[in-house]
Length: 191
Image (cartoon, rainbow, N blue to C red; front, top):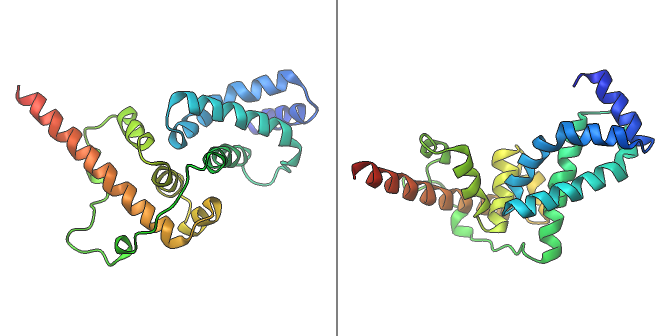
């Protein structure tokens, strides 16, 4: 979709035009759905989050003033809806483990990217979805969407150190899960 088409669709959405809303939904639903999958624990939850996000996008589209990326504006709504869902359910309790914040040494976790060579994107997404809520949200915000620890802390109402600790813990869990998958695959290949 080119810039002038998008501006026309946004203008139509601001006027309440259902045809413009359908076009906007149709064009962005896949992109935003993939984003929902990163923050939610399963497909149903991702679909619910997408629905809630689009309702909010259409209700608040008059607040978009044309500054910055429209897609970025919508992505922030999707992410905030997912975070709000966990906060409302009380599923986001945070435990700080100060030992995890220590200086890395020879036993520190290897970055997860080193273990992704033979794993499909669907498998990686499933592993991220299986992380405990507090770890999944921090991991996704920081590692996948490029937020800083300061921004993560503000979004989730946690400290910067808690963000760092939860990211570290998420990487350890993912590393273990990926190593188990690799070992299982190697055993299957030998049979």
